[in-house]
Every structure is written in C-alpha cells, then in structure tokens.
Image (cartoon, rainbow, N blue to C red; front, side, top):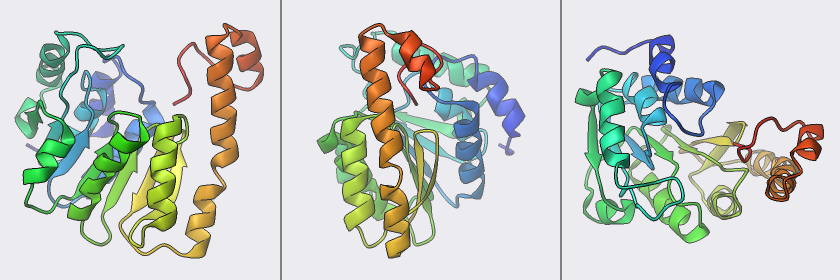
Length: 229
C-alpha cells in the first residue's frame, strides 16, 4: 500500500477518541515514513495513533491486550479498533496481536524499524515495553507517549535515557518523547533532565483537575478536562 499523506491520515485519526495531538501525530507519521522495516506499536486503544503510523509505514504490528477492566476500555474496544482501521483504509497494513507486549517480546526474533510505546503507565510495565529497543538498529528511532505527564512513564524513561548507552534523547512534542538508538552525550542527558520542570507542572495540573480546579489549571496554560498529554 502506498504511503498516505499526513493530511489523509489525520482526517481519519482525528475522529477517533484518544490522547494524541495533531503535532504529535505529525511526528509519528514523519518517523514512520523514515523507518525501514516493521513499526511496532505498544498500546493501540481505538487506533488513533495506529491509523497515523499505518498511513506511513509498510507494516505495523499493533500490540494491545485490550483489558476490559481499564478505565477507558470495555469488551468492544478491539472491535472498534478494527472498525476504525477499516474506515481509514489501513487495515491491510496492520497486524493486531491481542497480547501483552512482554509475551510477544519473549518470542520475537527480527529487527524492527520504529518503536512507539504507549502501554501501561506504571514504571515496571513501561521498562518492559522499552525492552523492545533491543530490536532497533543503530540510528533508528523510538517514541514514548505521556513521557512527561505520568510518574511511572517518566521514571522509566529517565532510567533508560540517563543510564542507557544506546538511547539518545532528541526532544519532545508535548509529552511525546523522541529518542534515537545511538550513544548519548552528556548534553543529551542534560537535555532530557531539563524537561523535568515541565513534568512537575503537569503533575500540578493533574492534581488541580482532580480537585475540580480547572480554572486554576487554565491559569497555568492548560486547556480542557483531560490530563496533559
């Protein structure tokens, strides 16, 4: 299937519920367009990000067990996901694995071109998801969503970004962090740590939203009822 333009991808993706901004979707589309080989997505939900990735990639492996006990999930989520891919005409590009990413990783045996992590947000699960980076070649990219708005994801990302010898932080678009599979310099590590004040701001906003103090959150530049992403 030929690569679809970002405008085409976003036309469909924007109608799907989820927590991915247009600017973040543009980054996903750009990176998928550049990727050589399979794109692996961990955490697909209703397919907002999957549609964007599949519009630019030759093949996407989407991994999501679709737990019905998740606050945003139910028994119909997988069916809605498939429907959304069909509506966007990208179903032929996507292989859906309704499993936990660790189970798939245990039997995986081939290089991938791009990794997008948006799975469970606790630190242990996120670190396990980031274990997929072992299948990325040098110079390939990986992306982490909610990297600066979830305590668990932020801690996991810091462990990888600060201690790994093959994870170079390039920058962020909102809470979407972009890394390159390359040796980081001290400046790269400091650039990652420099994002922590913004992460702290997001934690304050989340507390204000739970206290129903949205007006105060708006004074901090936050718009909407959803947590920062």
